[in-house]
Image 1 (cartoon, rainbow, N blue to C red):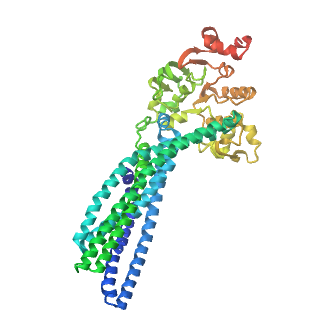
Image 2 (image 1 turned 180 degrees about the vertical axis):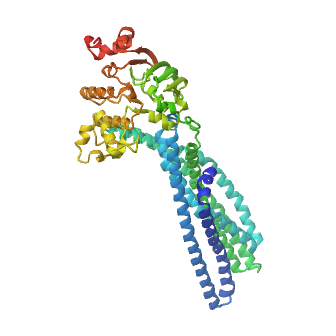
Image 3 (image 1 turned 90 degrees about the vertical axis):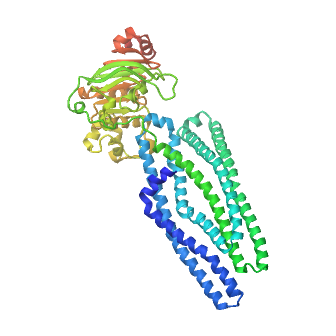
Length: 582
């Protein structure tokens, strides 16, 4: 929490924090003066039957209240500005950091957890900052000031405060030390609820089609019950704080009234002094009650701040610091576009490698087909090309340069990837197509749409390129979404185009037209095509056959049919024998 406050509160909003705290100090000073005025009103005005003095002192109390209220308004505004500004800065920093994380880092945190941290945890920190400016100074200072003023009035009665304070401190320590782990557990269980919610909403059609509504409801109920039980446990623990502190303080008030009455009767104290003493004790009581609530809030805030800082302080596993732009990759044609030498990759925490000892060379302008069974490592392999992950062993070179030596911007301008799942964002067709090249004009966009076989249905839209795209592209069919994502990858003329099963939703005729169009790109563009369809890869210059992450065969179609049993088996499962040999 301290590091978060230093980086996001005191560095940017120090002046407003100081103004807010000073305003709250002034308000507390007037609150501390009030019992003294009341004591004088009783001892001199009421006891001496001086109505004029009572009215004057009453007017002074009203003035104190108005001045305190004015400073309170200023403090409230400063607290709002600081908390809202901190929340905005924190969300921006978190979002920026999340975008810097590698795919491995995102896998480690989990998307639902990152969403919870950006939303729920930041909200909790924001509330904590607001209360910190408004209340953190007021209540402890009011409690301390009341104790000091009571000691000044009478040292013997003031000793009651000194006895109560350590007892309350022990209660605070006991509750806080046990609450922090529970609050962390509450936020972790919120991550699970977010994950289940995301899965259920994303797969709602499948869930209904298989009649699994009840199963999903039960799964959510279990997650909610687990979160609720933890929240109830920490709530019960926190609920002990107020009663315990109030019990201690009320016992102190009883002791003050009993001892004070005896001393008034003996003439050692005035009634006004006892009343002032009781007022100070009441102020301390209220202050302690609020401090108890603040302890609970700050405990939650500290837990959330820790989760936020865990992301912000995460050391990114992939970076391009110090990588200079590789001039030869963009200016001079290279004889070899892709080179893999002994490439292996293992996911974090996985018991076995996802890829083992992959070696191949692909000439510039050539086509590489990648085929294999489900889970054979095809997507993992192509994820290494734009450096979404780093190889665990071996070397992967693009146009003669190791991918780890490229700046991310240059590498991902050279290598354009179309993922398995077509991903569009809300906006327009144009805003989705210009991701790779914001300066692309309409002619370039239409050329990409023609190549991807998407031009016909885009032209059919009344608004053309400015047609609306809803969240996730849900107002387009699966095949249309795939063709739009292929068009997006083609904008900006990438040197390497990776299609990761990107035509799975296309009919065979459209798929064939797409492959024919891509084959006409010439030597400028090197293609890597991942597919389950033999027809999509059989025309490639080289075909890599993967079997549980290991290369089972590498070569052109005819050669693999003769030499690779796995490839021949895949071919015969999809094509007639005469088609396989054609």
